[in-house]
Amino acid sequence: METNIVQDTDLTNKRLIVQAIQGGATAAKIINASDVFVAQWVRQKCHFGCRHFGQRFSCPPYAPTPQETVETVKQYRQALLVEFGNRHIDDPDVGPKRDLIHHLLYELERQAFLDRRDQALARAKYLELH
Image 1 (cartoon, rainbow, N blue to C red):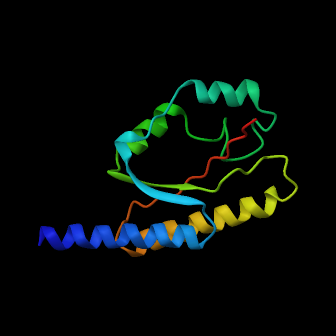
Image 2 (image 1 turned 90 degrees about the horizontal axis):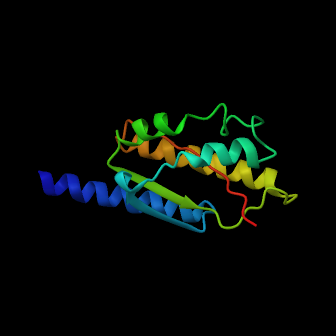
């Protein structure tokens, strides 16, 4: 029976990765949740280095604290890491791109839930790289 569970999990993972790529992601892969690193300095970078601080619910001060994020991640064995390539915040198409990203993450979370991953949870973070 254990072998069937592992095979089902592998199939579900592959299906989610394919769905992410077909939905517009540039890359997607399964990683161990324990490999997710949460740094304390990131919140400070947002607070003092981003003009969008406090303007989005996915950003501080609304977003979970680093410690809350660490505690949440500890409850998972695996994570689906999804990349959308370079999406610069000043790009005039960023709104539609953001909508695409949110819609795809919602669909991935929904599919994972339907595949009996009851704790499925999608979160998006946008990076502004110079």
